[in-house]
Length: 107
Length: 121
Image (cartoon, rainbow over all chains, first blue to last red; front, side, top):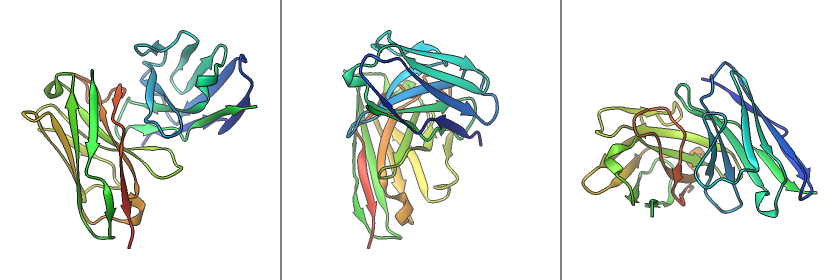
């Protein structure tokens, strides 16, 4: 089973700041990596797939990069609606596994 | 509108059974792999099970293997999860999720609102 590790676990940020979230896989997943956003009381929402492709309707301030075992989700200028928990997920091989999440909170 | 709506959650005693349903609309349900993903209270996401378009291929997480059964009725655009021998650690929100159209392993682009399952005496 491929283990996914996200860092940091929590992050306090001011609106307008640039945010970088990290995700590491225990073995190479090539670019079979997705990022999801989950706001309190809501279902997760797909943000990025294929490591760097934005899903339909996702604002351009969200970008993904990386391949192999190291991945990054960047929010160029954090908006109030971006405060949420972010999860990475590998879909190279089963079982599909998620990282533990990074909670982005208000500073 | 593309939509997934789960139902069937509730309170069940340890060792009991429950069947979850997920009604799909707004897309060609029969063309997609479908999954169940769960989230224990205050915890992260855990993939549970998947099924291909024609029910010829299913897969389960080790934690539910032998206790849960995934199935689908393409004529009714509905996905199911039959859960038996439930344990306290199965307590979670269960999400119905759309996977890939051609690939068993793909990102999850549509999520239902979830249904809560609580296993407690």
